[in-house]
Amino acid sequence: MRYGIKTIFLFFTFITLTGCARLPFASEKRRPQTIAFYSVERLHDTQNDPSINDEAFTPEGDNQWTEERYQTKINNLATVIAGIGESTGPAIIGLSEVENEQVLRDLLAASPLRKAKYSIIHYDMPDERGLDVALLYKPSIFSPTAQQAIPIPFNDKNFKSRDILQVQGELLGEPVTIYVNHWPPASRTRRGRQDDSNVRAAAAALRQQVEAQQKENKNAKIIAMGDFGVEPNAEAMQQVLQATGRPNPYYDEELFNTFYIHFVNGRGSYHSQGNLQMLDQILISKSLIDGNEGLQYVRGSAKIHDPEQIKFLFGKYKDTPRPTFSGSTYFGGYSDHYPVYIKVERKRQPAL
Image 1: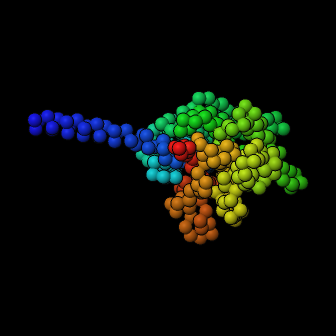
Image 2: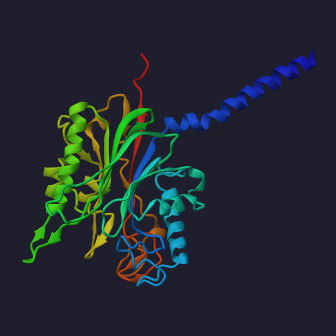
Image 3: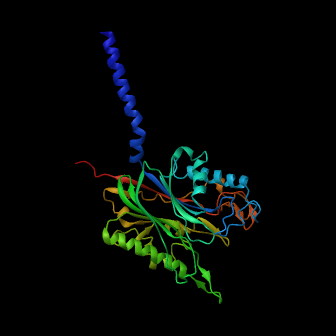
C-alpha cells in the first residue's frame, strides 16, 4: 500500500509542477503591460547606401562610424530597452530613426534583448537620410493582424519624410490599432518665421486615420506614439490632431495625451536650446480610459525613462540625454532622446 501512496503523491506533485510551469505565461497576460516609444538617434549600419544620405555613418565618413562604435550603440540601446517599465522590458515598443531591418535584427541579437523574443514590423520609408520608424513586439502579448505604411501628403511634393506606421492586432486578446510616428520638425521661412505646414500635414494625416477608425467603431482602441516634433500644446497637436490633456470621456473624438501633465510640469524627453522639450508622447483614445471592462490605460503610468546611465550627470548638460553624437563629436552615449512609456491592463467586471 505504501507504494500506492507514493505513486499518488508523485502524480499530484507532477500535476502541481506542470501547472506552475504554465503560470508565467498566464500571469504575463494578467499583469499590466508596458507600451513604449524610443527615438534612437540615427541608428545606421556601417555600410554606405548610395540611395540615401548616410555617408557620414561609415568608417571613412565624418563620424568615423566603425563597427566598434556601431556595436557599442547597439548594446547601449538594447540595455535601455530591456530596462523600460519593468525587468522584462516593454511588450510593445515603437522606434524611430532606424536605417533598415538589419539594424533591428542586430539590436534584438544583443545580449540584453536576446531572450525577449521580439518580432519586427518595419518598412523602408522615403526619408532622405534613410531613417524609418518600426515596431517591436512580443508575440505572446500582441498578435498583429494587419499593417501598412501610410504616406503623408505634404504640400511640397518634393519634400520627403517618414510614413506613419499603422499596425492593427490583438493586445491582451483585444483589438487595438497602433500608430508609430516621427513627424518632421517645424522649419523657418526666409523671413525667419516659423513654418509648421509639414507638422500640420502629418497631424492631419493621422487625424484622418483616427476618424476612420472611430467612424467604423466609436469605441475603437487606439494608441498613437512617436516623436511628434512639437510639444503637447502646439496647434498641430491640439487643433489639427485633436490630442489634448483632457481625459474626460465625453469628448470621445479626442485623443488623450498621456504626457500633457509632464509638459505642464516642465519635464521633457529631448534637450534643445537649454530646455527639455516634451516631443516624445503617447496618445490614446478615450475608450482606453472610460473605466469599462477590457483593455484600459493604467492611470498615472505615463513615465519618462531616464535612468542615470543614459544622461549627463555633471556640467552644463546635467540631467539631459547623453547622445551618441553632438554634430560630429562622438560622445558614445545612447540617444539624444529619452524613451517614454505607459502601461495598459485588461480589466474584468467583478463577479456578482
